[in-house]
Image 1 (cartoon, rainbow, N blue to C red):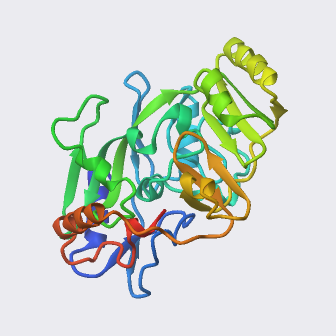
Image 2 (cartoon, one colour):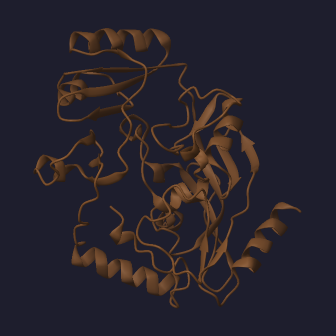
Image 3 (cartoon, rainbow, N blue to C red):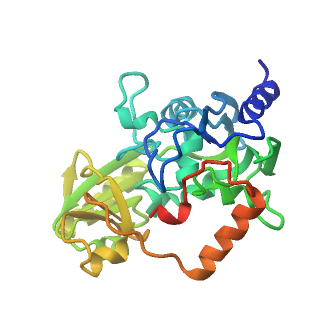
Length: 318
């Protein structure tokens, strides 16, 4: 089956009538609410369709596991800015082949629909910056293309990025074009009882800084000589080499909540991104009324019958 036929078959499966949701790796299946039991479940197309290392773009089916895409790009020394799952991110020197932990079953479309940045967002940028083009199925079963397959493609509204973090409530993503980046030749985690604000101020673009209230973890990446120079500076600030960062707690909350003392248990702040992670879920704050009204208008425009991923609400997903 050709690429176009693959997309058309997916659109036909989505149809025009029944409530429908896309199933990915189910790594964040309950975020924002669960679909009713009678919801039609479909799977997006899979596979790397095209990859141009010179242009640093890749076209891939939304049902493709992120780990599978990462292996394909690694052969050309590149990566995408999509988290693999757990504490892993593309470019973390994941061995080719071998067994991956279960949480790395996250798919490209699922990661974009949930919209959560990876732990390297501080240095590598936000998840939505990776998306250049999206082909999605609308509520009336049509294939719609938003964006374009080049890095500088935006004229007017950047509609494809509305899909990032929408939990599939505006359209069911079938295929995307993603921007790629070079993989860093070297990377190193360090940790110590040091000030995370000082680490961020003194180090040159660390890709990640995590802090649990007493210990800070920092990830350095780049050319070997540069990483070693930064590591010496990190040592002077109280850090020492470690094998990996701590496990990421399962529930995301605003970083300001931990600073305000709303969460008494263990937490892990993702410094510089506004996010923190806790072991016990807390209340989701009410959205700003202006944001809530805009969300309702978008939903009414993109999915007036409410058939796409029913039961899910992006505003209930911290």
